[in-house]
Amino acid sequence: MAILETEQLGKRYGRATWALRNVDLAVADGSITALVGPNGSGKSTLLKAWIGFERPTEGRLRVGGVDPSRDRRGAIRQVGYVPQSPSLYRELTVAEHVLLAGTLRPGFDAVLAERRLGELDIPLRARAGELSGGQQAQVGLALALGTRAPVLLLDEPLASLDPLARREFLHVLVASVRAVGATALLTSHVITDIQQACDRLLVLGGGRLLLDDSIAGALARHGIIEPVPAGPQGGSAPAPEADARWEAVQSPSIDLIGEFPGPDGERLGLVRGAVPGARPATLEEVVLGHLVAGRRQLHAAAGERAA
Amino acid sequence: MPRMIHAARLSIRLVRFELLAFAFLVAGLMVASLAAITWIESFRPPTSCLTPIAEWDPGCGTLLNGWYGAQQATVQPLTMLLIVVSFAAGLFLGAPLVAREVERGTSRLAWSLALSRRRWYAARVLPVLLALLVVTYGAGVALDQLTAISVPQVDPDRSFISFGLHGVLITARSAFIFSVGVLTGAVLGRVLPAVIVAALIAAVGIAGGEGVHQRLLRGEAVPTAETAGSPGDLFVDQKFKLPDGRMVDWQYFESGVPPFDEDGNPLYPIVNIVVPADRYPFAEAREALALAAGSAALLAMGLVVTQRRRPE
Image (cartoon, rainbow over all chains, first blue to last red; front, side, top):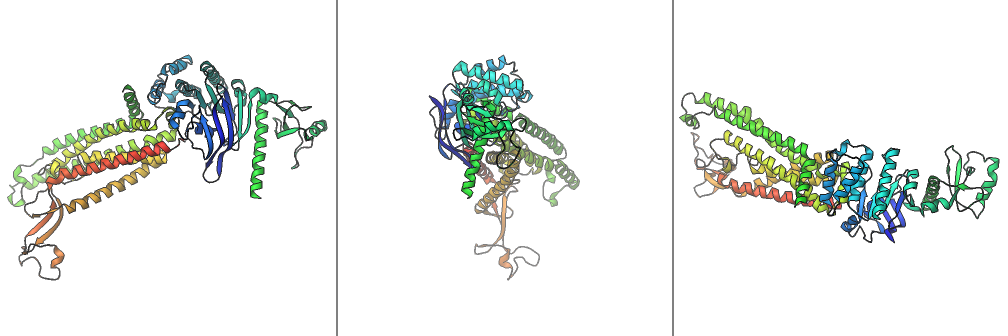
């Protein structure tokens, strides 16, 4: 059953800037889903729409069956939210944040929040401004968990964390979510980390949903052809041994999703399904290939409109 | 109930520095006012000197000079400081209240936790407003005392001297500035622009309101014989009373016979048009209520903006 849903969701800023367009998605209850995409792809806008901070321009969305644009209070009741970048009051201590959450949210579980913070050795008497980025993120997570909401929305919680802090944060998140059977949706740029923590992947690009698959499915259903010769615009000449693979890619039966530069500047091609000569794709390559394809579609659509 | 007390305590905690700074400033100025009043009293001339010059005892001039000198040296700067600090307290406590939350991003956390933004807003605004009222009431009382020492012939509670610059109107005007600040901060979502814009709007609002009230008071003025008035009356105009009962001003005589005889004595009784000092409590209460109503309306608008705005 889907606990987070959108139907043809669109959000426009100003007259012509669409942050989200025609987004249809459903996040299953009890899943941990990663929402990835480049800056400006609409990830934060989508999360803010679910918590009622943004009103959709078109389409509908629901969280736990509640439409936030019609019942913001009901939607907030469904959600524990960890905002992008630390949003703590630097003058207040950690304990005062827990107290504050208790004054704002009826039923807030202060004992649970304080126990989580205690397990992480985060001093309750320390001011938020004195905590490291990792500790501040953990405080944000503890407050969100203390709401005992069925859905956790985490907006770039890993962005300012070092690798160890990221790992610890995800460990606490996964353990907590699994323990209470909640649903978590987190946005992130750090694909290697989310691969271990999440069971589902959503890729947003240019305000549109480009991929919606399980992590295992996304890995199983994509492959990489390398190197792919540069396109008609020029670039490096194809290596002779790549010719056979490139011919295979050009076959109408092969679904080439997108080309993108590899770590050494070589061009890689993301293909759908099992293709002879293709190697398994990493999750990062799956995301990159879909983002490139999404951008190409966007440019093509813009060109058609201009024409 | 404990939840509300905790919420109020945390709201005060978030502006503790500003609140303490203004409270200490006002307390310091109150102590300084008390010291100044005691010092001025030591220069106070005998009652016989507080009469028309013709009735002075020898030496009254020197005594009065010393007394007025002591007043000028202390009362004027202290009055100015108490007014500025009270109005600044309203501005610097009000404008950042919502604006800082939006600017620093704490509104994202608070509004994602709060099921009701109305409760959040009330919990943030009301305790700080209450603290402001207490602090500025102290300033108003100190200004009452300074007004009383500088015009000892009148009761400051029944006098239009320094109207609006002492007593409860200081508190009411500070609350009005606070409310302008809260609304401006909620709209702009940035502290510095909110402070600047709120200062301008509040200055225009208070000056405009005072102008309207002065016009209203003029309509309530009554004629009084030139010698019968009180120094605390609000002087509006001076006229001559003609034998037929009409009251005319100087322009009436410009093209005809002047209203004075050759020795400079008026040919007709001179009448002052004044708002009697006894009306002061009513006028003060009316302006305070108008400011309170304006503040309530501004805070209600601030709530509407807060409920509709998105955190950045």
